[in-house]
Length: 115
Image (cartoon, rainbow, N blue to C red; front, side):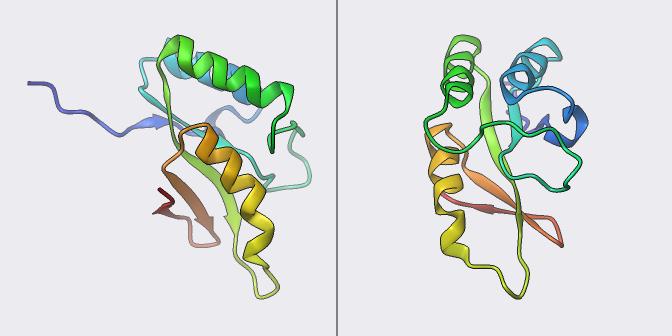
């Protein structure tokens, strides 16, 4: 009996490609999960329309269904003294629509369940 390994392609490994392409790369490299960066971690990263009902998010949803890859987590939620958690709500809603069950929190980098 095969044991499900909850190992996925991390967004940090492929930041130079769109989230939709990350799903394809995960499948091509035999991962069963993918972690998607919906919030920029640095000002030098490529900017994608990753929050809400955008064409890119619809493409990601389509690819996830077609290929069978699952979103394990979304990232990266930086917690600072001035953080207003309510501002994360649209990102969390997008992640839930994509099937994510966890979020990556920083600065310590821990995963927590969201559903």
